[in-house]
Image (cartoon, rainbow, N blue to C red; front, top):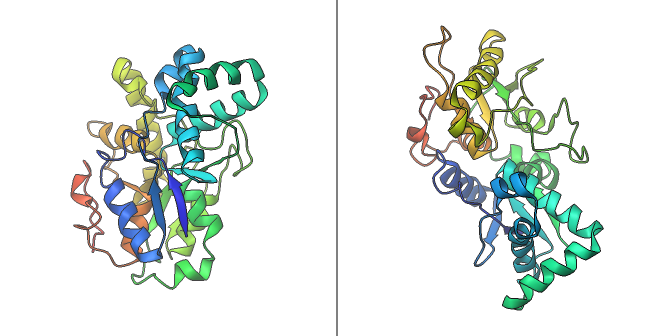
Length: 280
């Protein structure tokens, strides 16, 4: 299985995301073929200005993928996923903007045509892999491991075509296939972590993140699993001094690696700010 892959700017520095993604891909025989010469998707500038220049950034990524023969783009960041999808939708429905963007892309002999599917790697794992193929690689019994699936707010909003917008279940399904237990009635699963606003509005964002942790702790989770670099960092770094036990926040690929019997070293669990005790 081979996919065009847009890693995004935060993939390399995230707490073991790259290492665990590459490790589980080797186990599952999945090739994430990195789009050559990719650039930042411009998530921050896109949300703040939405002018033509902001659309050129995601359009260039899509044009590169098309030129390199890919039919879809897979990424691992909610902000990247949302930015690419919204840009794609806008360009498909705004002919005048599309002409202007392609005029800019033409300086590199690139052209956006809108032929790609934009997908998140977690959805690829759940929907493209037969459940039996995933389960056969599970080596560690996680039946007593209660996992709070934290999706964040951008993964499936506003479209709702991947999963339910208010109560998504794709990661819950993955957790069950790995033999663990998804936390029931986790009402904070789609709460916003504040994303990049953590820089300018730290105090307000810490309140948001502690609510995400509190809901998981009170309802009995042992770990929070997420699928976005900013979500992971914000939730993990907002803990302490709140009267609650610290809650490890891992990527869904690290959870997969644990189930597959991969070591904590291979999954770079030492990068977590809140240690995970259940490491192989």
